[in-house]
Amino acid sequence: MGKILRVAGPVVTAENIQDAKMYDVVRVGEMGLVGEIIRMENNVSTIQVYEDTSGIKPGDPVESTKRPLSVLLAPGILKSIYDGIQRPLDVIKSQGGDFIRRGLYPDPVDLNKSWDFKTIAKKGDKVKSGDIIGIVKETSIIDHKIMVPLGVEGEITDIMEGKFKPLETVAYVSTSTGVKEVTLGQYWPVRMPRPVKGKLPPNIPLITGQRVIDTFFPVAKGGTVAVPGPFGSGKTVVQHQLAKWADSDIVVYVGCGERGNEMTEILTTFPELTDPRTGSPLMERTVLIANTSNMPVAAREASIYTGVTIAEYFRDMGYNVALMADSTSRWAEALREISGRLEEMPGEEGYPAYLGRRLAEFYERSGNSTIVSSQNRTGSVTIIGAVSPPGGDISEPVSQNTLRVTRVFWGLDASLAQRRHFPSVNWLTSYSLYSGDLRKWYEDNVSPEWFIAYTRSMEILQKESELQEVAQLVGYDALPENEKEVMDIAKSIREDFLQQSAFDEIDTYCSLKKQFLMLSSILKMDEMEKYAVSKGVTVADLQSMPFKEKLSRFKEVREKDIDTYFNDLLKEMENEIKGRADKQ
Image (cartoon, rainbow, N blue to C red; front, side, top):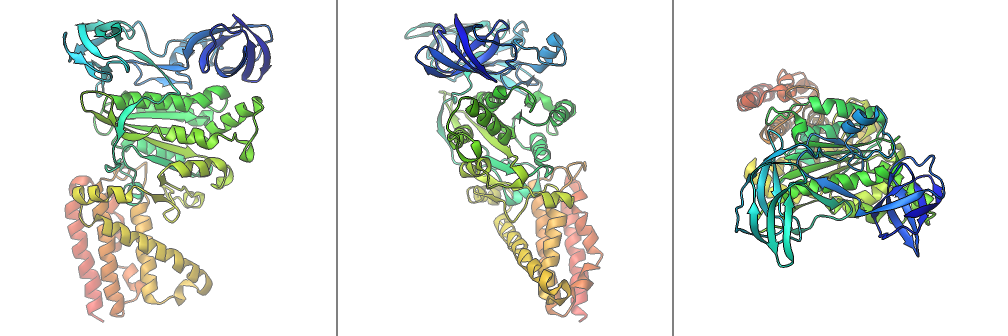
């Protein structure tokens, strides 16, 4: 039994801890607060405590659990709401009231609940690490696949079917070192990435139903995204939309250091949301990790590791997982605070010198991967990290280190949000390095003209930006008609295509086919208006034509009616524009 020498906020120094090892979890003080050894020097250990240390004093006992900070990966994870170190918040409330009582560490899942285990392997089968031996129906839409733990390989000597608790043995595997037990659940250290055989090329998009994302700045399954933006620019709304509509099988949402009222909104709205693909509650394929800004700072630092470990576990089952981290800035602030308590040499803006490495290690755990198994499975983890730079200044260290390791940048713009343009993704500053990788998929699965439509649209928006600078100097009326026409088309792309309402029943989600038809109709209008202007028609005349309203209402059309609506719109457009031009 060790004893405390010094207490500095969440950082505690202790000596003579029996069998102490780096990153082992310890119980601190009479209350048994949970902590983790983060530095060792001779027989003195520095401990990062995941709870409030008030009342802890030198001389209090410290005991090692002889295990690193780990999560329990077992049936019952889905639909759960955890804090940063996988303590179930609903159980904590039932045991200790509305506030987290210190030293309370309930089991992550109900260890007394029995699950119906169906075998798919049989006695005598040869199995390797990662092989699926059975299935538990965890929710109505997700099968929890029970896998042979990593490091275990051999022959199944016995396997049982029926009802089992998470830590009860369901199979025995004879290995070269003896007989190993396989239970429904398994522990895994959060700071150690779960291994994969290899990573696959990022050539399949994560379809989100958000036009500005899917068409202009797509992300591949297994990709990485940075979403920086100032306060009030809509980061959380974007992540909510992706959690609901993206074509991922599992969603892990990590609320890392966000305001309590914002997390409360998530915790109250998510359980009420319906999964649009299955009609079941969205929580049946969701895990929420809530670590608000007033919760202990050390647990905030652990929360994103807890989240990504759970995501990797479901990836190993063969699922596509989307991990939302909101926000990594608050996580970096936790790193900075702990680093200061450890008296480490500060880097830029007081952040620790290893900030960039820690961010890279986190984002590198994404990927579309071949799973460690003899059963030839693939799965993916897509990481979408929100960044909250102070004052919206993305030149600060967290934003810059994030952009260095992510391949998609959705730059949220407060001025767009103030003009009620949502999603407020700035099309001039954002980018996606996956566009080239995904081009073939879009051309094969949506339209061979997809890339041409995307390129033309971006050229028009870029040209509009240049013309707006000229118009501010000489006035809009002084521009020639052909330049006014470009600004008219760009306005249509912005308002009729990029702007999308998360609260409209139809517009909240837009299929790829509808996105392409909407963009095609705007580009067809561009061709016809250019022809009309060349014949002497003014842009003012074109703007007053009835088809404009029909075009603006395309976003309100239901999926089953889009083909008819598109064809009717093109006919009206041709009749009105060409009819007016041919009269000149």
